Image 1 (cartoon, rainbow, N blue to C red):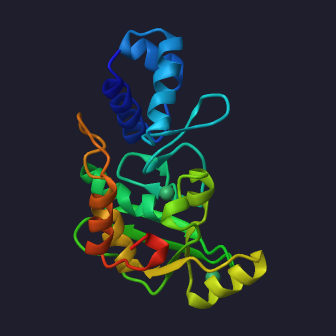
Image 2: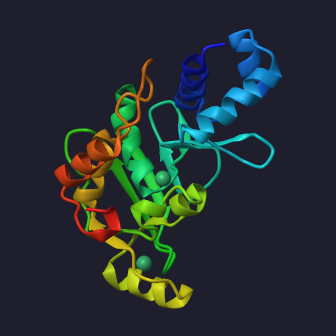
Length: 219
Ligand SMILES: [Zn+2]
Ligand SMILES: [Zn+2]
């Protein structure tokens, strides 16, 4: 079984259905044994192409998530868990056939509901801000926790009160337009065969090009 075929099968199932395939479904689809599939999924997880739970089930294949992390994302035909703020805003760019995607969440500080029609042409309007808690160098230490703490808030004030209430250090705050630019091309190519993750220099160049800077991003 080709590992890239397995990666693509996972990504395409997530894209088409909003759900992660289980190992049995992947084994049947690829004509491979379940032990082989489980081993190859571990390899893909080690290379950060996807995230497994303790039982080897697929939890995330960025920007797709099988678990709720504070966001929903509704396309023309499919409803996804949105992953984090970054992942939710990435979905319309990765899935242009879905049109604008309705991204919805609650402010973690005050519980106010927020929703945006997110498309590929321009950033959605709104004065809300994204707060990312975990610095880039540590994002993969526990990536589910990291994504669970990349959230959208009403305002800087709500970020401040959430940090105070939870006893956390401030991470990085950006406006909607910066979040949208960050999300726009970060995941390019993940639904295509032969995808390669950016190397650190390419990643740094991308982050700079969307207007990010400072030690939080390792820049
Ligand atoms: Zn709020
Ligand atoms: Zn995320």
